[in-house]
Amino acid sequence: MFGFFKRKENVFQNLIEQQATLSYEGLRLLVKYFETSDPEVAEELSIKEKEADEVRRILIDELNRSFITPFDREDIFALSRSIDDVIDYADTTVMEMVILKVAPTPFMSRIASLLKDAAYEIMHGVMRLPKNPNVALDHAQRAKALENRVEAVYREAVADLFSGPEDLHHVVEMLKLREVYRHLSNAADRGDEAANIIADIVVKKA
Image 1: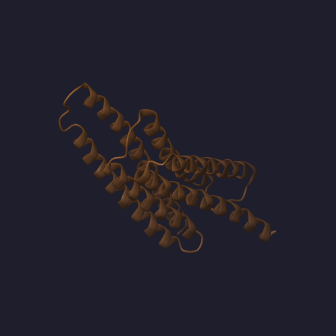
Image 2: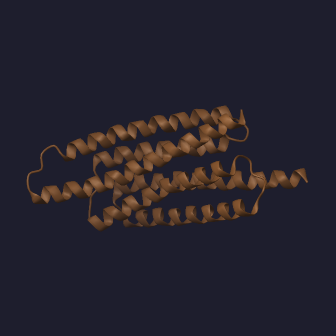
C-alpha cells in the first residue's frame, strides 16, 4: 500500500518536472528565434507548447482522480498552470511577431535570455523539491531575481519606444513593439508566480 502511494506521488513530481523542462526548452527556442527569425524555430516552439499543454492535461486528469499528492493539490494545480503560462507566452510572442511583422530587437533578445535563465532556475527548483527543498528555494529566489531584471529591461524598452515618435508609421511600429514587450513581461510575471509557489511549498513542507 505504501508503494502505491509513493508511485502516485512520483507521478505528480514527474509531470511537473516534464512541464518545467518543456518550458525551459521552449524559452531556449525563443532565444534562438530572436537570433535567427527562422520560421522553423517558431514551429519547433509551437510544437513544444503543444507538448507542454498535453502534459498539463495529463496532470489535471491525474489530480482529479487522486487522493494522495506530494504537496497541496491547489499548489500542484497553480504551479502547473504558471509553468504552462510561461511557455504559452513565449509561443504567443512569436505568433504576434509573425502576425504584426515585427523584427526582433536587442531588448527582446535581452529579455528572452533572462527568461530562459529563469526557466532554468524554475526547472531545477521543481526537481529539487522532493529531497532538497532548501536548494529548491535557492533556485526560486534566483528565478525571482531574474524576473526583476526582466522588468527593468522591459521598462527600458518601453522608455526607448516613447523617446520621440517621428510620424504615424513610427507610432504604429511603436504600438506593435509594445504589444510584443507586454507578452514577454507577462511570461516573466508567470515565472515569478511559479517561483513564489515553489517557495510556498517549501515553507509548508518545513
